[in-house]
Length: 207
Image 1 (spheres, rainbow, N blue to C red):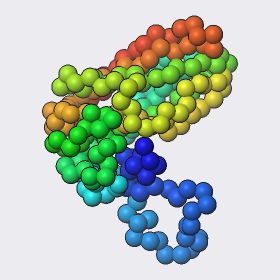
Image 2: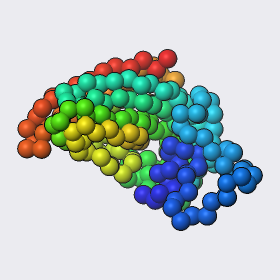
Image 3: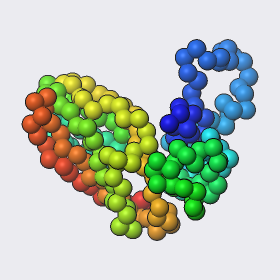
Image 4: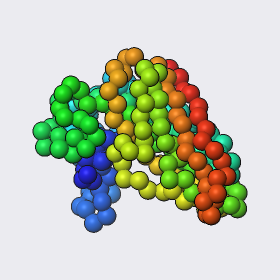
C-alpha cells in the first residue's frame, strides 16, 4: 500500500518527506497546510479529503490516555477514532479488496494511536500488543490479519519509550450502534520467547 494512502487514514494531509520542497520559515501558509489537522484535532462530524475519497467523515474522535499494565511494560492507548467513506475513489478499490472491501456500501475503519513504556531493565517483545478489538455490536476485528498500517515496533528494550504506534482496522458495523469497544492484548515475551505476561483485555466506553 502506498505512502499517501496510509497517510490519508490518519491525517488530512501528510507531513512532507525529507527532501520534499517545503516553504521557508516565515512564508505564508498554503491552503493545504492550513487545512491539515492531526487526528487528535479532528472532531465528530468533521470531514476531510485524501487519496481514498474526496470526503472522509469523522464518526468518532477521542483522546483516551488509557493505560494497560502488561508486566514489565506499560501500554497507553492515546487515541481512538472511527471514519467512514461513502464513495471510495475507484483507483483505491484494488488495495482495499485485500481487506475484504469491494465497493459495496460505505468503507469504515477504526484507528488507534498508542505508546509503550518499558521502565524495567528486561527487554521484551510482543508481535501484536493489540491483537483483537471487539465492538459492542459483537463484531470482532482481528488486528493480526487486518491491520492496514505497516507494522513497526515489536521489541521494547529496558528503560525505553516508543510513541505514536498506529493501527488501522476496517469494520462493517454502523458507527451509531457502537457505544463501547473491548481491546485484547497479545502475549508479552522475553527475548528467549518465554511468556512474561499473558493476554489482557479492557473495555472502553465511547462517550
